[in-house]
Length: 110
Image 1 (cartoon, rainbow, N blue to C red):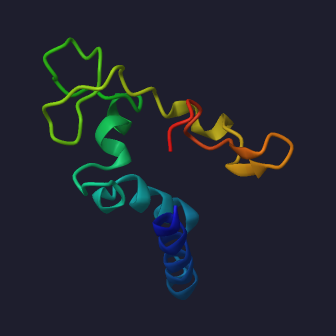
Image 2: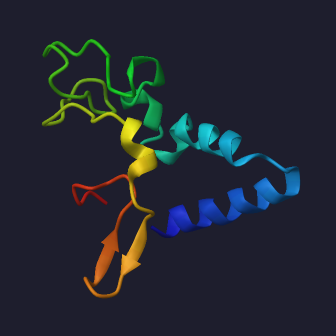
Image 3: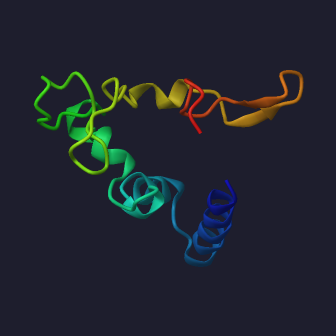
């Protein structure tokens, strides 16, 4: 989480300094492999914009599950479409519930 905060701060400074649009910043983040743990995949790797934001890579299991970042291991499901993103509530801390809610990880992943 600390890494994400630092990245957000530095990108915010870059955005202000170079007058980058929010759309361009979002696109850059969506396609940036450096934000993944092993720096081998971006959001677009599994949420391909040209395939309704799903993982359309040939994976040997009829696309029933997404490939891991090592291109060998398989997850336990297919990456969901990212088309619903604009309908997701903003990521925030819910004091009443005592944890973070919203954003793109509705299934509790960190």
